[in-house]
Image 1 (cartoon, rainbow, N blue to C red):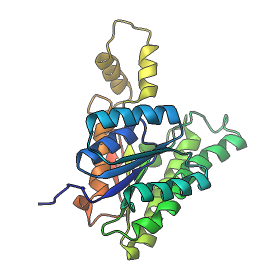
Image 2: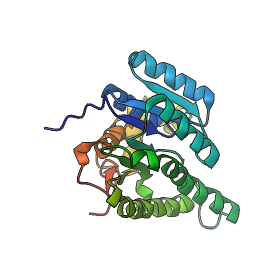
Image 3: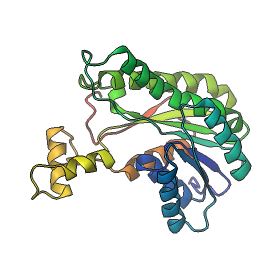
Length: 265
């Protein structure tokens, strides 16, 4: 049996103030980890911290507003989090959102912005925290990615291409970091309940539908075999597996968290 208790472990979660990131922080804290989280919005971060402290009053938690696209801010976050909680042995790269655009509608500036976001939201934190990870016993990096990396959509052409590049980057980092004992893996999420989907629900035409009926209808339209959207908690559990010794012989891999939406075998 593996002991998943993480009382002597420091984990870092970027984009940790909402959605999958917040669910991941919550799960790590529940297992005894010390957790540092960051997000761009100081207000949203403060709300998240208040919620987390109510659920885990004894937890060791550090939060700092930080834009992961700003290398200097990320380096400062790495220094401050280590001073507060000790060196990180888990890094969860969870930042970035999708861009709806076709090839025809995506100009050079949009391509540059999208590629920069998807790559540097991983590159900056990984560079900043890698020296800490290398000093710990069982270091792991987990990158939150999208099913678009393997199953591109024509209405999200730039995001699909960038996500595919990130999947390749995970494989490359896993190979390069393996001699130092640092494992690198990722998850590929499908449709996960989020603020974006909740806003679309609030704007629905059929006001008689509740969330369950509306989201089940969406799942049918999207041909999700499990017939529903995923929850942030479900994605967090996949991240937890890859971030802990439960997956000690796994690196350079991805877990599909899409409810069966993936078409490839």
